[in-house]
Structure formats: structure tokens, C-alpha cells
Image 1: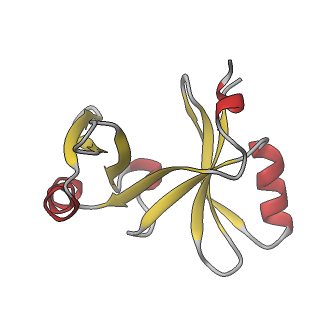
Image 2 (image 1 turned 135 degrees about the vertical axis):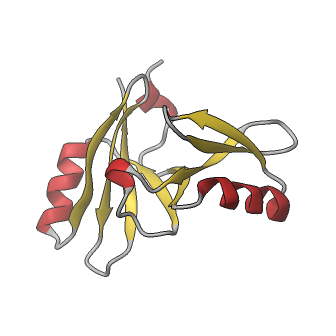
Length: 130
């Protein structure tokens, strides 16, 4: 079974928070909502997977605002499954939106980008790998 058949199109499939002080804020959410913080090695720093305490399933990510994510607003970013990322990007632009983080490949998972709608709200679009 491929990834696309497991993810209904239009589903919110992930949540990320990209901020300057990821370590501090991951501790905040651990204390406030009970998530467990699991460091993810990014080379010279760590981002964090946030795990549900009852089953250690990753439910969200808290990341440092670096690289292509440097200019993302400090807000929870949802990832929405789309059938065809390229077609969704074209329609986004045609309807007055823009791509604010270009397409990135997540090996073994798929491709995603971050868009901004005409009202200024942002979200990520994700196309699962075949």
C-alpha cells in the first residue's frame, strides 16, 4: 500500500511550531499539555518531536526557525494532504495566494511547501510519496 492510499486528501496530517527558542518552548508544552519532548538531531542543533504521554506517538513538532523555515511566523502550522502538490501550488497562485517556503522533499514520505492564502493565513501542503 502506498502513502497516498493511507492519507485522505484534505486531511490535516501534521502540526509544527517553528520558533527561535524551540528547546524552551518544547519544555513549556511538556509542562502545560503533558507531551514528552524527544530531541531530533539536525546537525548542530536539535528540533523536537512532541509525543503523547499515553502511547509515545508523535503528535507534533517544535522546530527552530532556521534555514528555509527562518521567516515562518511563530504559530502552529498545519500540514494538509493534497493529491498533486504542483497542481495545488498553481491553483494557489491563480487564486491570489503565494508560496512562502518552496517545495522540499522528505525522503520516504513525500514533498511539501508552505503557502499563504489571500487573507494572509499560512499552511503547508503535503503530497505523499507513491
